[in-house]
Length: 235
Ligand code: FES
Image (cartoon, rainbow, N blue to C red; front, side, top):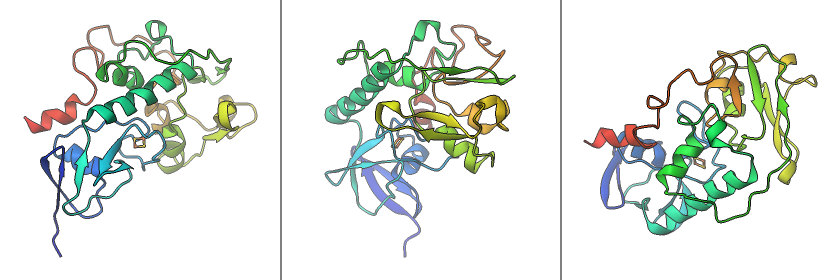
């Protein structure tokens, strides 16, 4: 049996090892597939659907779909770009994301995806939900206004930190990130150097006393769009 699987993404030949996902093989070959709930080193959740690609004509999430010999994958098409734009726009309107004031501006993956996908203004009306903050922990805080329910913190706390500090609670529009102590984050074993505190793609889990440490112009997405580090592998 061949140790290498060959398939194409938008006509470009991609090679990967058996068991790899489409996202992993694409990353390795310098093809960027937008993603949000998947973070490096964490198990995929397959929940945001931003990484949706067409595989032999059927939609699949690239972060969970294993590669297969001869598959024809479409990634950068007008229809998929619009699908991703719709998801990002829905996330932008259903929370309270005030980018100009947010300390993650310039390093926020939601904002960076909005720029990369050319979103000027969401096509849906803003919902302006009432959401709370959890600020009692000495080194960390949760701002649920900005949470996009990606679940990265849940996976990282459970699988990397071994603490299960974060979990989802509630349903539908009431779904929110909760902690494993009734007293909130301050009653948990959460620490500032937890992987869970690092992987938040937006400004929801924040390390205190780190705000605006990187000046405008030197933040990760100030000069290059999200995904450039992956595409640089092709050069
Ligand atoms: Fe694949 Fe979210 S990154 S579903």
